[in-house]
Image (cartoon, rainbow, N blue to C red; front, side, top):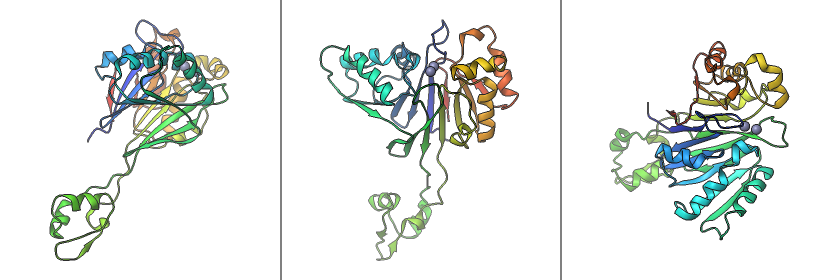
Length: 304
Ligand SMILES: [Zn+2]
Ligand SMILES: [Zn+2]
């Protein structure tokens, strides 16, 4: 099966970095484009360690304004100002999140050498780019607004070259126009319509990222049929009361979301340092409910 998304975990620790885990950030690559989800302290160095580079890193989506998700953006934007890997950057987030980004960017000093767009988001479409759409959905994290994200590839239709051949459409611009949804005339004068040469649509890949949140059943609706679900699992069930109190999920709750959503794979993220010596318990707890669960780790790359 072909790869649609390349996901690299840059930081997988909750609240504070540890020796082995940096704070929240995830890099999503799709075709030649890259998106950063969250940007905890030290994220720019984590990106360097992946070898991915900053080129084409023009979209940054932020789940909420807590520092373990945004503090790295000041350094990243400052480095962009020196290396100029891009001519513009758009940061998406709630108004409260963007206000903090604006403050961090204000420390850079001399005027920015590239265009920085701060784009407030609400529930719904965040951006659409070529074959990819990104949607935000609300999470519940003791803040006015916090979001999870869906990266949804648009449905794909295979071009039936053998049919085009039979209809006398030569390789070249006519076929590209058919692919783009236009009808074209064959050399014999017959009009050929896109539906004649395109296979029925197959759904595109879906990646869902659930950042800091309490468990609530609608999460599985947002994550429905995800090819890959990344979910926070800050606590074990033994600390479920505390998890609810501070607006986080347990490993069992993250697995419940994956199971109820009919997701294909689950990566547990945002792990608390309190279980650093017992991470296998997090995995066991989740696998009991959703067998295809994995622990995210820094610099792990997965293909979807
Ligand atoms: Zn967090
Ligand atoms: Zn948080």
